[in-house]
Length: 373
Image 1 (tube, rainbow, N blue to C red):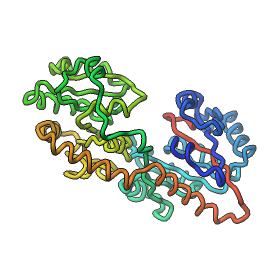
Image 2 (cartoon, rainbow, N blue to C red):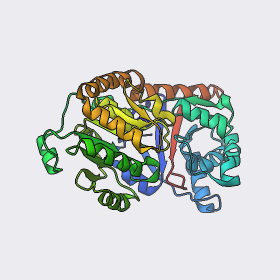
Image 3 (cartoon, rainbow, N blue to C red):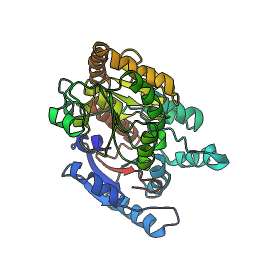
Image 4 (cartoon, one colour):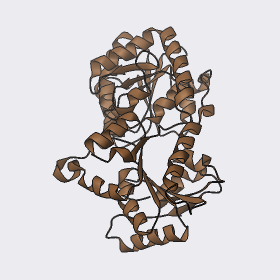
C-alpha cells in the first residue's frame, strides 16, 4: 500500500488513504506529504455513524477508484463504495485465510456476496490467485496477478553488519548468524524453527538465531527457548523498523511459515543478497526457488528445516552463490516500480468503462483485524 501511495503517477491519480487512526499514526512518518490520511473507524454494518461518515467521505472526495487491502476491509468498504456510486472497486486479499473454519466462515459465502460489488481482484501471487478462484470460487475473469515489489535501493547486498552490532548482541565475530524477520504469531512457525534449531546447534554450537519482530507469542517463545536450552543461541530482538540493517547481520534468513501470501521479507532478504530457507507454501515458492535463490522445505517439519539450515551454515560459498542469484532474481521480478506500473494498468483498464472520467481520485483501505481502515 505504501508503494502505491508513494509512487502512483500524480498526473493521473490523486491518492488518499482512509485508515483506522492507529494505523495512520503508525504509518505517518512514511506517508508522502501530498497524501491526505483520513481517520475512519467502521467496525460493522450496524455502525450507522461510521457507515454514513464513510459514504460522505467517498462522495465529498470524488473517489473514482476504491482499493481495499485484505478482505476484512473490503467486506464493508466495497458494498458501501458501490452504494456511494464509486465506479471502480478493487480488492487485494494478500493472503490465504487459514483461520476460516466452520460452515459459515469456511464456505466463503460472504466473500462471494461482497464480490458482486468488486470490479477486480488483485492477487499478489499465482498461488493467491488459485486460492481465490478455486477455493473462494470468485470469478476467474475478475482476478489478476500483480506481485508485490520493494524499493530495491534500500538494500545493499555487499554490506555486512558492523562489529558493534554483533558485540551489542553478544555474537562472536565469526559465528554464523541466521535471521528470522516475522511477527511472533502461530502462522510464522517459530516453534517448529526452535525444534529445528536444536538440531542445528548440535552440529554448530557457535551459530546464533536472531528473531526480529514482536507479537503475542513473545513470552511463550522465550520460555520455549529456555526449555530447549536454546536461550544462549537465540536472540529475541523485538520489533525493528530498520529491517535492512538487521539483514546485514545475516548469513541467510529463514521463513518457516505455515502459510503466506507473497512474503515481502523473502524479497527483502534476497534484495540484501541473503538467501532464504523457507517452507514451500503459497507465494513463498514463487520467490524462494529451491536450489537457485534458497532452499525449500515442507511446512511444519523440524528435521528437514534443520537439515537445510545446517547445509547452508556448512557451505558458505553456496550461501553466497544463492544470495547473488537471489538479488538478480528480485531485480528482474519484484521491483516496486513494476508493482506500481502494473497496478496503474489495472486501474486504467477498469476506468475505460467510464470514458467521461478524465481523472481519478484513488482511496485506499487497509485491514486492521475486523475493522475497515
